[in-house]
Image (cartoon, rainbow, N blue to C red; front, side, top):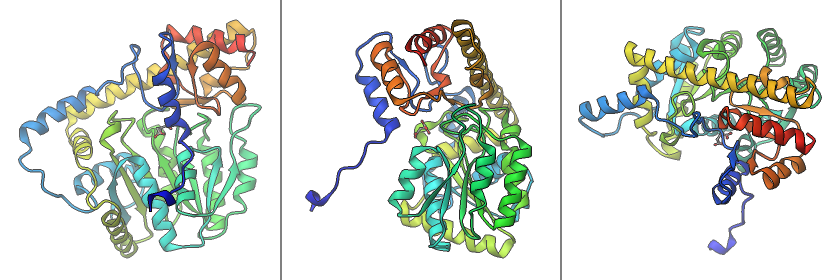
Amino acid sequence: MFSNLKTHPADKILALMQLYKDDPRPNKIDLGVGVYKDATGLTPVMRAVKAAEKQLWEQETTKTYVALAGDPGFADAMVDMVLAGAVARENVAAAATPGGTGACRQAFEMVKMANPDARIFVSNPTWPNHLSILKHLNMPVVEYRYFDAESRGVDFEGMLADLQQVKAGDVVLLHGCCHNPTGANLNLTQWQAVVDVLLKTGGVPMIDLAYQGFGDGLDEDAAATRLVASSVPECLIAASCSKNFGIYRERTGILMAVAQDKGLRTLTQGTLNYLNRQNYSFPPDHGARLVTMILNDPKLRTEWATELEEVRLSMLNLRQQMADELQRLSGSDRFGFIAQHRGMFSRLGTTPEMVERLRAEHAIYMVGDSRLNIAGLNSTTVPILAKAIVDTGI
Ligand code: LMR
């Protein structure tokens, strides 16, 4: 039987992680997978997470099952953090999932159950795993223009023009902030224009919010999601706690479905519970419990928000250093976009051949589409990368 299985193309980001591990060069620089690293190259456990883990270890008396949708306290805390009252709580169905990826997967499955003909509109480019999961589920994908290769910003005219093709019941996948892989984002005026198109076409937005707090701040990064959720009749939100709580391997995420009324919320909640049961039964609890403890305890919450802000500002600082250094070495402003982009990533906009040369000649690892993880840099490696980029002729 197993001989009937086919080989699958390796996930590009994960394959790169392995290549990096296997590279014996001591000066290698990892700008691949989206994991935050501090100036010493460590991905630390956040202070508030450590403190919550200690408390939990002392206080937790049972590991028995909680609920199919996870702890309701987690849903309340996350709905509040993401939506902050933008929509009535009673209209929001929510289920804990294994990471943001789990939330995306459950969202796609629910769409398929609700409307088997739905097409999923995705930005070109988008996170490769969106495409991979959609392919696995055999769901039709339509790309909309997003990245402007010339300016390295958003091709907003192209995006709006392509979204006019959306039909009622199609789903439009949007990155709530910190677009992955490009780092190029819409401003709120542009988001409003997207909302107008959604209202006109009847498209259902699905927002992937994996980097809240990594761009312009916790509330600022949720502003677009709040605007969309409060403007359209129905909306899906896949939120991740992997990055902003630094609990990657704990697999902590949540799928929210904003429904038009309480009755549809109940129906949707039942489907979310059902999908959890079919796919893995109860969702992981440990990370979700830490997040709930942190968000509900003013002291832990302040500690966490302070550290998250340090992380955000350190990435902004690295962006500015990188743009300045490139400006100095290249004598041009053509890399100014790095300081404008937000979140963990920037797409350089160069060819796979150039990316390969950076790897072969300089031991610098970035994803083949020229996405680099800003958080993989530090003040020592910024000048090294800048020089390599200019020397390679990018
Ligand atoms: C990334 O894009 O690098 C992260 O979201 C990690 C992953 O799972 O791909």
